[in-house]
Length: 168
Image (cartoon, rainbow, N blue to C red):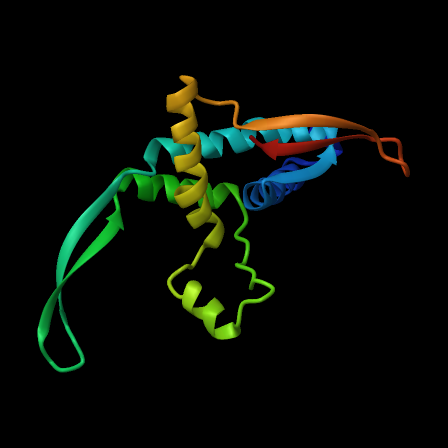
């Protein structure tokens, strides 16, 4: 039997995961009013989780043998326990989106840019979105309020109330 949004729980969860991934990747999406209102707290919790843990890193020195057979010490920056846990929780809440090659980017440049990135959306959340909103929280003095919903009227085909939800 359908529940909220006229869907079963698994269908609704899949819809929220998909729309949250697209909203975090593109910064704005157009959807229905009901879906936007369901999506807003879902995305804000993801962003809050990333903000609270994005600085948790551990630096480690590792001895590695290079091509010439010499042992060389390298510094490696890894996620701390809290950031790793948050990263895994966020991965369960959004679908992974593939990195897209730029219009004037060559295949070689694209491969070099995306060489060590396994989950581009998660990297974007922790490297771009979280620092941006952490800085905003310090300036404004409040947490939350990372998204905005604009009502755009009725859709022509079925007269559903549409809205645009975007990251501020």
